Length: 69
Image 1 (cartoon, rainbow, N blue to C red):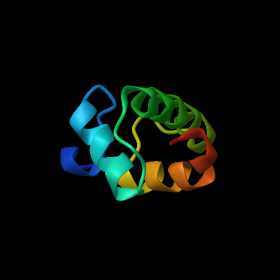
Image 2: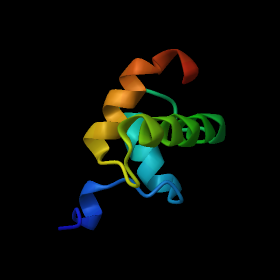
Image 3: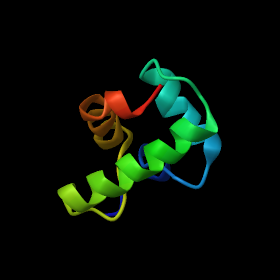
Image 4: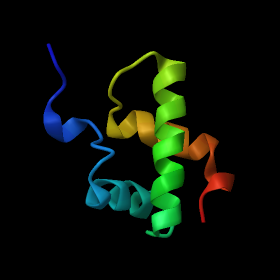
């Protein structure tokens, strides 16, 4: 069964990335969104997943806080 759409991160939507940044106390800038996309790509490879849940991305953000403002 595929995960519900609202439970997964759509990396092409800035508002979704801004939401994750805001939830993790980071600035909502273009640079941070680009860094978040790179963090997401790395997490997908490490977890061997095609899509990430918000929880998956939040965990990856915690491991890569130094890459975000």
